[in-house]
Image (cartoon, one colour):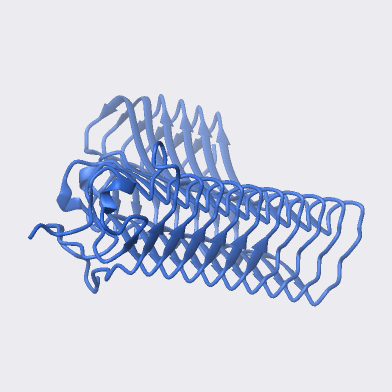
Length: 463
């Protein structure tokens, strides 16, 4: 018997700082960080606990900062960070807990900052980050809990690249193999007097690229995956309160401004997954409410003033999924004054898939872009949903019935969509789903824009 509580708590952090170094011609990686780990485990097995079981991580998180370094011609990656990992794990097995079982992560989370570096000519990738993960797991197994089971995360992940030169590496220029924020609240064959809740709040995930040159790499220019998830499970137990998985006030954002991302053999910018997922599983008894919800959150992709050209694959590839729509949720795609041309696949590819498509606002905005001479489609977009009032497809002169967000200014067009595809299987624009408005643009055939388009695209207003 534990007459009190079981507590694992960490309130410190990890910081790695590299400034003004020259790191060249090494046989392996230029810089290799073999994992940054902050882990708190509270574990109670085959015992009684008269208080709480709590795992808590606070403090400064993990920060990796690279400023003004030259990291060239190394035999492996220029910079290889083999996991940034923050975990709080509270576990009970065959245990009677009077209070709560809680796993929580708060604080700044994980921050990777690259400013003014030259990371070029390395035999493998320029920058490879093998997972940024923040994980909270509250797990009860064959137990009784007098309070609640809670997994909560209010930290974020930020990757910021500013003014770097990342050229001619033997693999991707920048590869972030997964940003993960995951909260799991799991009750297996457990009786819980209170609630079982998985909750993600806080800043979410932000990838920001400003003024970089990422060119001539043997792979994608930039590749990144983003996952923001909350899971609440009741398996063969009884919960007298609520079973809830929620994401509140957290976003996934990808922002590219003033970059040159060209002549890479793969895709210029490859966002394989923007994924917000809330999941509730009930295979027992829940006396309260069962809820999965996303509120005041969303996915945003913003490209301004970039040149993305001559890449072997698509210029920009984005694949997004989101479920659990609620108030103030959106999926947005803003393209302003970019040149996306002469790529070997599509210029811009967007797969927009909210599982409950008519509960989440979706926005595509394009103004002042040049999308030309791509081997595939100029713009290829798939939008899941049937309600036109939950989609703003604005490539110029949007005139649909959706309620515009506060401060939204309708696109004036000014895009150039010319000489994309073969006009047999690839087009200037390919649209699947709801209508796109595209007034005031330049087309391959100005007299008949529809001849280079497939799908529902409005290019002129009937007299």
